[in-house]
Image 1 (cartoon, rainbow, N blue to C red):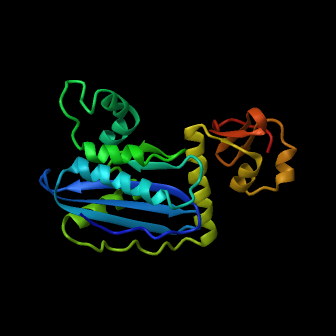
Image 2 (tube, rainbow, N blue to C red):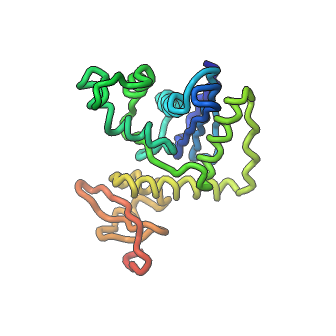
Image 3 (cartoon, rainbow, N blue to C red):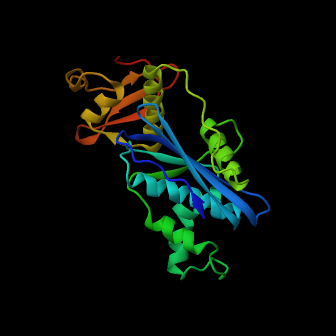
Length: 242
C-alpha cells in the first residue's frame, strides 16, 4: 500500500481529520488525512491501495493519524474528525464485544477488516477520541481529506497543495485557540489554571483572582474541583464577571 508519511513537528496539534474513498467498493481506493498545528500550519498525507474497500480506507486513515500523533505533541481534548460512523462506532462501541466473542459479530460471523481493527485498537491514545462530521457538508477539513483520498485512489500521488492562507499569523493562532476551546467544551475537559491562562492568553495572577464563573468570548468559564476550570458554550443572554 502506497503512503505518504507525515513529518515530525514540535508545535502542538490542535485539529485532525481523515477520510477514505474507493472506486467500485471493492476497487482502487485512497485515504487522506490532515493535521492542524497551533502555529497555523497544516500537514497533509495519504495513501492508496489498488484493491480495497471504502471501509478499509476509512480505517486506514484513522490509524495513520493515531500513529502520527504518537510522535507529536497535541492539545488536550483533541478529536479526530471523520464522516465514517462505521469507524467511530466500531472504535468506541463494538470492538470490546467483538474481542469478547473471539472477533465474531452479534450474528456469529467473522468481523470484517479484523487486521485493521486490531491495529486501531492498539494505537489508542489517551485523550484522543473520534468525532463525527457529516460528509460533503461544507466542512473544510473533511472536504480536503476527501479530495486527498480521491486523488490517491486515482493514482495521483501528489494532491494539489492547499492554497496559502492569507490570514495574518495572529488571526490563525486565534482560530486555533477558538477551535481548541470548542473541543474542550464539547468533551467536558477540565483545565488547570496554567492551561487556562495559555488558552485565554491572560496573566496567571489575573486568573488566580477569579472565583466565580466568567465569560471568555463565546464560552462560559466555570470553576471545577481541585482548582480546575471547565468551558461551556455561553447562552446568548448570559452576563457575568468579565
